[in-house]
Length: 249
Image (cartoon, rainbow, N blue to C red; front, top):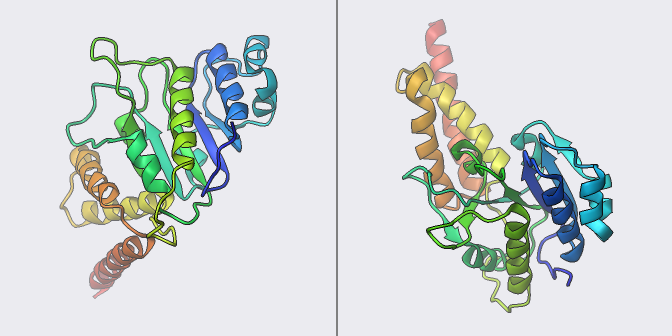
């Protein structure tokens, strides 16, 4: 069952997996659903172990050719759209989630997405709030409130199935060009914004991360375009130029 895509180069990203059986199962799912590449961030197990290979079966090539990164930023910054799965219940009150169905249907409204990444967190505690803010959109899989956490490979299978199902639907593609600001553009912008606001005294070191995270979540929720984020960066650059030149006078 191969995904019929309006995007290419689908990447499944696992963050700090600690079970070789789960990694092997995910590799097999990558083969089942026509994923382009498996990426792993700081694995906490031997992903090339015999256990992993046995579970992978025809997906062993995804283990052999998987890319390993030492942080999530490096794993996603060549992608123009990043989605994150979250199964945690101890999330920030400012967090905003959509259903996977709604998000995947939304991706179909674009003519083409060049690089799509889907992130899955640790088996025991998922993704941190700061990691979730690296994604353009975050979704969760509805489960029982008494036992909300899914096995990692089960979560991956549900998400890839939902994505496959959405690919078979017909949509009116109102947005011919995909121009959403990438995760890297947003990240780089907020590094500059934080430095500027610290410099003018609006932010304090011990509270800057929390305030910037709220601001960043608003930008993500607004589906900010590349043009809009570039305008924001232009404003920040001009303010920095003025501040630097004012100090010289």
